[in-house]
Image (tube, rainbow, N blue to C red; front, side):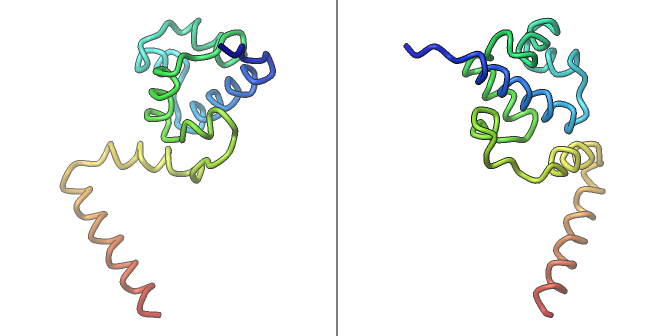
Amino acid sequence: MTKISNELKIQIGKRIKTARKDSGYTQEELADLIGIEPQSLSDIERGKYCASVPNLIQFSEILHVSCDYLLTGRSISSSKIPENVRYWERLSPGDQNLMEQMIRLVLKIMNEK
């Protein structure tokens, strides 16, 4: 089994922290969603410990970033996507339907140009 270097733990922790902040979560909120103690999340973000593989997958899903991004720093989606997803989730189903129709209309207009 390969030991994870301290530098890699620090980099992974920084990426988790950045994605958490970009998504608008506090440490307490994210820790609760993952099912870990806030202090454990703090330790992960500071690089003291590395998250387990199942927890990395949960971070990825909740923060709307790829595991590849968390591990390597590559292939992050737009920094606005997590923020926009959170707005989307707050909309009522009717408003989500209306937004989908508006997006389709805008895309149709753009494709006609």
